[in-house]
Image 1: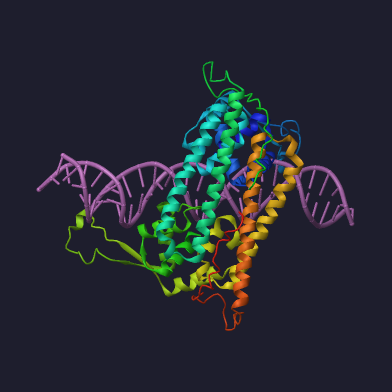
Image 2: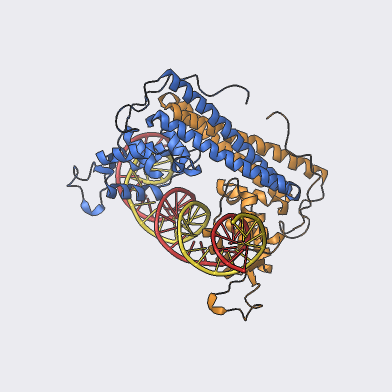
Length: 214
Length: 214
DNA sequence: GTGCGATGTATCGCCGCGATACATCGCGAC
DNA sequence: GTCGCGATGTATCGCGGCGATACATCGCAC
């Protein structure tokens, strides 16, 4: 989760912890926090796994600075070759691990680096996931509606409408993806491995954000 | 968090673990899971704290059943007097602890047992919280819009619209609360302590759910 | 020249989640 | 009539994220 986010961000440019967190907030802030309390341990884990290296800048340069004060240099992280492989692997995943509530946002944020085929499959997966849930809530709501507290009901209905909204959003996105896939054929994974391609040239931006009737 | 949810549910009726979880899903399912992995430890903690007791039903009744098979009776939990006090205390809180993302839903779900004054303050607190966040995202979006990836942008905008939607929802709810407060005066906390009252008679249900233009 | 807010690295304890294990019960298929 | 299966029921474990917190440096304003 955080792992994917970090790999995705470092793919674009080497960063140090603080900056990483800023980007995290800027990119995913609407729905996810990612405090240092998870970031640093994750970085440690990833380094141990060999996905990233820390090219720790100062420290060596200012080697004659008072070592007792614990002179701390910025620790700049960047991807290793294995890290890039790992990223490609994560980005090519199109299963539940990509469309569950907690993960979907992160995967979506890096759609720019994701294979078009995978994009569609993830979007569809999430949509049917949400549709399932919606049906569940709807029926359980129909059964218990009368017995329910006024506020509980209101909460339920607000949640239901949120889900509805996201389903509509996803449907729009899927259609857009389909359209640009049709406009750009000769893409159905000709060479060996899929998902490893970084380009992901943005398709003709179709004016985005269906500004229609909300 | 879970603590409040459990207290709130047990206030309505004694329940055992499994049932408790069902209710939890039914009441908050749209936005919160609450697996057994948190439920049982919480129940344990709450019992240790003295908020609840388990009137474990069977086990004693069928005392002659083979004890080696570990005959397990349903464990029915119910509130103690201290538990009721604790619940009242939690329900009377109208600070950030009541309107943050994770907590708001639970507090709202038990608005039926909450003092009308507190209800309004929580709703307003949440609303300004969301408005703050919205402003933050909006400006940061305005600054970086051009540099942003197509998908990141889309994600951001969808998030922003979600926040907008919730703000509108809250505004509606606040107005409704205000209206029923005006219709039912002589309520501004006449006796000693506030928030301790369980009645919370539902105000004249104003046909709910603004079925207007969505 | 001093204080304060942004930058920067890091840890700690808490809490919730998903997976899993295991036992019982009621019911329909065969 | 029994066999299995899905619902009911209690419980644990490890993982990962969160908020609070600590502490150090830097640049700038007053």
